[in-house]
Length: 274
Image 1 (cartoon, helix red, strand yellow):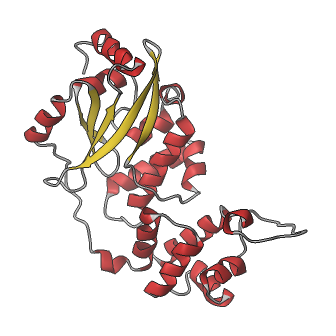
Image 2 (image 1 turned 30 degrees about the vertical axis):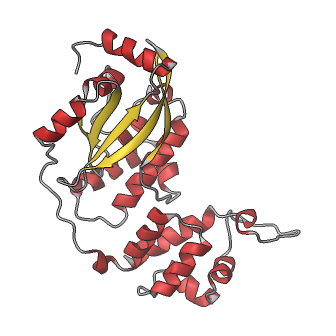
Image 3 (image 1 turned 135 degrees about the horizontal axis):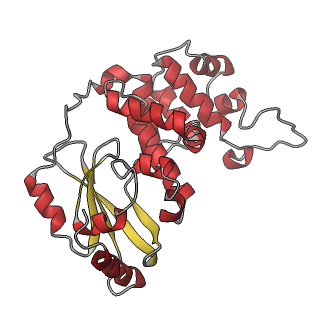
């Protein structure tokens, strides 16, 4: 796990800039992108030698104070900070039992079907789409790889048209996958997904190498279907307490907006398709 910690630190350092952290570099020519090890060490209040050992995996037990200083130096958000702590002290996280199958209860299925004016679907930690209501079925109708949001984003060429802001959506999905995959070596399906995407998609390899860590929670999302044009939705995620690890994604258009009208038309056009 110390090698994973070092890999994460190196990746984050490569994508930091002197402007981002307020350092000056007059006449400074850098052979490689990002900050130098000694600069990160200075920002975190560590010795350059000790930080180098962390990156090289030669110190596998950094203290809580050291991890907090690194999180601040790298300007990590809450998800990435939690990920950093898990990489450094995986034993403290406990082992997660991987279910043989992700089951969506009838209660949840009935709940999502009650949303007749929003796209609602259930995902697991891998972003497999386990269930969807009629509106979501209409949005995804005819698309390949709709078994998993990340496979859809990277393996279906149409995805760049489906998501108007494809790069942003793809990066968010990869950051989510990195958050759950980086410290989880007990889920063979998750590891297979990462391997498949790494083989098949250069864009996935590029974004995966960034080591961005961020969960999917909320925000705006713009989708496009040739039948009805562009639609803007507000995205919210809901946890299912009775099924830890599963979440409900709710994409809702503003009532009376062009997106709301487009979605109604799309539901009619795809009636009968699930």
